[in-house]
Image 1 (cartoon, rainbow, N blue to C red):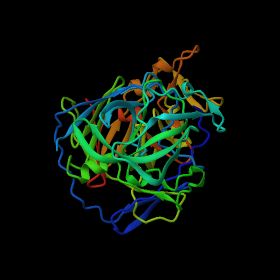
Image 2 (image 1 turned 60 degrees about the horizontal axis):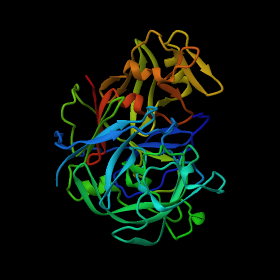
Image 3 (image 1 turned 60 degrees about the vertical axis):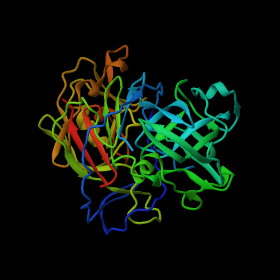
Length: 426
């Protein structure tokens, strides 16, 4: 997908009222870091259950999490990479039936396409149901009942949008059962699906949830009538069903999502810890210390012995295929590959598919973590000129550590301590 610019819009959630200091200003808002982040790290244990992450067929390189301004056991879930290496999905049980859903650390809602779904076009013209290309549709109602006078409404950075109703449902993922979890059933969608997945499962902070008061989504406005609720992962941790963390170990063909600990059988080095940052995009009025995305400080990006860029925040997002840095950083990385070119038509960097590869590393905390060679030069993107898409691209204003980075590490999202831990895969 062509990216000239992605604009993010973030909602609110409650957070511990700790003093914060300004850390970084961008054209889209302010990054803040708490001046006191002494929460103890959650103990790391290996989980005993596995949930597969499966491959979806979404063609977009963008995270579905990036919204436009307009609108009692541990469990391990196996993940499977998308056919176009554009994301990961998993199986969850929604009200007694299994569904495949896109897994995304850059958004917070759990939603399924309802059996009463209506598909529409970008300009709200009526389309046949098949145009949305969902997998099996979910139920028309919730076993725990619909929440009165609330609606679900979210738009995504690639232009897609969905609306629907809110309710309560029993959810099971990786052996973790959450009763009466707040979730959404989508009744109207402009969606370009993969014929397999039926919805989306978001694991970001509850501040990004997309419920609104009232029944008419045309009247929804963030900061006015949005309603935050506790999403699945925070409910499971809050009820003591799992320790307050989850981890990802992604591969090109799949991987593992582990609830409450680490996946067994994954070889890795030592962990490096870094604090999560508070990203206040657009500097909108909100509680000062509200966590949203999993945002970390990147100490620097290096190619071999040269610095490509340093000291900037980045969102850790499993829902984004590539990794995105500023134009300067991406250009410096690309120019470390002999024969690299920037294609103005697609606004993407390409390198020769057989290019000699430099080492590209990212500093997080006290550790340095490298991209795998196969995730820097994406061979499945080879064109007729034997040029391949570079796994690091440029984006204006927002930096993202996406799947091309995550496949080289084990990433631990410690929501109890508001920190992240990374270890290099072996």
